[in-house]
Image 1: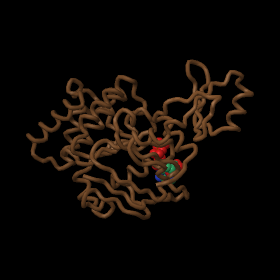
Image 2 (image 1 turned 135 degrees about the vertical axis):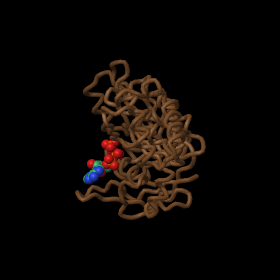
Image 3 (image 1 turned 180 degrees about the vertical axis):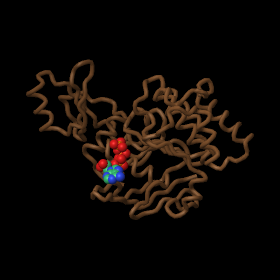
Image 4 (image 1 turned 90 degrees about the vertical axis):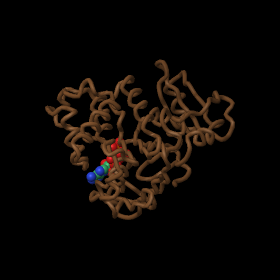
Length: 294
Ligand SMILES: Nc1ncnc2c1ncn2[C@@H]1O[C@H](COP(=O)(O)OP(=O)(O)OP(=O)(O)O)[C@@H](O)[C@H]1O
C-alpha cells in the first residue's frame, strides 16, 4: 500500500498558499508529517481525506485517484480531524453505533460486534455508557480513533491527535497507534517532535506550504550529526547578541533554567561543545535554514 502525492498545490481565497507543489511517497506504517503552526499540514490532511479540493496535482492511494474517486477512497479511509466535535449528551456506544451505520455497516449483529471491538481496542469499554461531554481530552481522542477505525481502513489520517494530552494519555495514544500500524498507511500530522520520534521510521517536514525534508528519521539525524554545537551563554545580553549575529543558531531553549543555543556549522567550532544531533535539531535545521525543498 502506498500513497503518492504529486505536485499538489492549494491557494485559499485570501491568497494564502497553503500547499506549494507538495510531493510525497508514503509507504505502509506510521508516517510523520511534522511542521509548525500554519505549515499546511491540515490542508494536506483535509485534501487526502477528500474534505477539500486541491487547485492542482494528484493523490493516488494504490490505484484510487483520491481527488476524482471520492466514494472509492472513502470506503478505505479513516480520518480523525484536528477539531473533532462530539454530541456531549450522547454516549460513546450510541454515537459509535450511529457512525457505524453511516459507514455502511447495516447488519446489526456485525455493528454491535464492531462497536464493542473498537471500544475495547481504545480502552473505552468501561466508559461506553457515559455522555461524551464528560470525557477527558485523551478519552475523546481515543474515541476519535475508534470512529476513524470503523470499516477497518487501509488509510488512516490523524491530524494533531496528541495536542493537549497529558504524558500518560499521550503514551496510551502512542501504544494505540503503533498497534494499528501493520498493513495500513497511517499519516500522523503533528507539531510535536516527540510524536514522530516515538512512532515513525519515515517522515516529512513541512514549512510554509512546502516539504522541506522527506525521508527516514535515522538518515535525517545522521545527515546533521557532527555539525551541531551547544552554547550556554553566561553573560546573557552580550553573548546572545554575539551568538545570533555570528553563527547559524537553529534553536534556543531553556535547560534547568539556563538558556541553551544549538548552532549548525559544517566548519569545526572549537569554542563550543559538539553534541549528538537529535530529531529536534533536524526539525529546527530544516525550518530555520532550509537547504532544499522536495
Ligand atoms: N479555510 C482557509 N481559508 C484561508 N486560509 C486558510 C484556511 N485554512 C488554512 N488557512 C491558512 O493556510 C495556512 C496553512 O494552514 P493549515 O491549517 O493547513 O496549517 P497547519 O500546518 O495544519 O497548522 P496548524 O497546526 O496551526 O493547524 C495557514 O496560513 C492558515 O492560516
